[in-house]
Length: 201
Image (cartoon, rainbow, N blue to C red; front, top):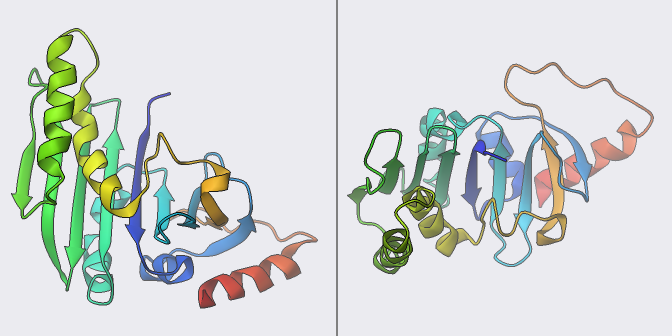
């Protein structure tokens, strides 16, 4: 499976993160939604993760993320495995503090751009990926993972390794931008109560 997604992580509560991005919560589930947008809090680190099926959504939401970062730290990640592109960027105090990006769509699988002051773990992460990639030139583009690895060191989330239902408290299903509202069913009263509760947590 090739991922074409973006995700946003923050210590903010799930409801606060959804509100900051103008996304409506339409339901709550204990199981990770498949193919939907969602926001949930990680049990291990307490950070909230907002998952988008649009690989460019996080980058397009920069103004909202900058505004939210005046209250709390925000990190966004995007990965497009079809075109071998990935990026991670952190915002704090209303500004971007670092950005790491890889574009392997050309012939340079070693491409990596770094802006600002990245986390100290970047050096170790990069060396580990370089060593593995040098051992087998025919293997996949491992530099694609570097921006995502660095971000995961901070917020504790990887879309490959810890994206199971049991890694989160519960999932708040979001309405994707431009998507029609879901039809209301028999369980909507309990869902509305859970959504109001989620916005307070």
